[in-house]
Image 1 (cartoon, rainbow over the protein chains, first blue to last red):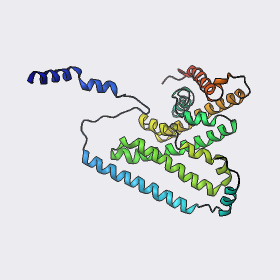
Image 2 (image 1 turned 135 degrees about the vertical axis):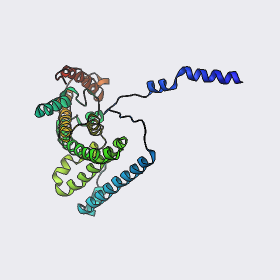
Image 3 (image 1 turned 180 degrees about the vertical axis):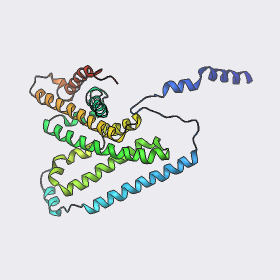
Image 4 (image 1 turned 120 degrees about the vertical axis):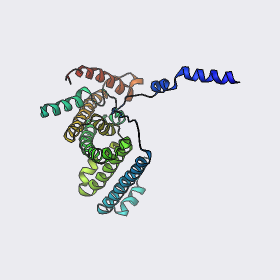
Amino acid sequence: MFELHHSIADIIGFLQISDVLHFLIPQVGVGGGVETKEHVELLPLIKSTLIFLAGVGTVFGLGLALTAKRFTVQIDPRVEKVLDVLAHAH
Amino acid sequence: MEIAKLFEIIIAASLINNFVFTRFLGLCIFFGVSRKMETAVGMSITFTSVMMISSALSWIVFNYIMVPLDITFLKIIIFIGIVAGFVQASDTVMRKVSPGLYYKLGIYLALISTNCIILAVPLINAGEHYSFIESLVFALGSGIGFAIALIIMASIREKLELADVPKPFRGTPIAFIVTGLIALAFTGFSGLIKL
């Protein structure tokens, strides 16, 4: 049992998972320029990400809502009724 | 020197690294709209203007908010959001302010927000660390490149309508073959500029 465990570890060590991953994951793409860091502070990163996404969502949501309100186009309801009566392609 | 660099960016984006013929992006709109010259021209104009404005917006958000906060890994989702929000807003405003323009170009606006060139341009701007003017010029160049591609393709496809194409190749298949041939021709532009 002990030997089996060892041989599995040997096989895994022989394969060198990191090399396989390096081969599988493409290193270039549109935009390229991946910047790597040695150390990342996770908690502040998550915090600023959430704040930023919420802020962007709020700004876009409010902006679109206000634009839609300010620039509404009144469509005559009779237009739709007439179109309903006419022949449809679909 | 500066002007020469900007000119190089335009040439590189429109001819050498043409988005349709060299990078093969945005093919869905390319094949969908290039059937008639009129729609091709309308699409090119709308596309170039939307691309310039959205790349300027994305540049501002990227360099003034995302880089200082160190969250540049969010660029894909944020750029998609910026493009979609801007397109939706301009759609709403255009419908009210100039209905004539809306009925001419409005159908293209909805198509543009799902295009991959419009996402690739801000991503390349961010990856290459372009300045504001450079990213605007890059967007203009890629818009011109897309317009060139659409107009070449539309003129060929209008002629193809009358040509005696073998039955299995009629329609989209022959369009793909023609695109491949034009792409081969566009490789002739490589090496035009030495960076």
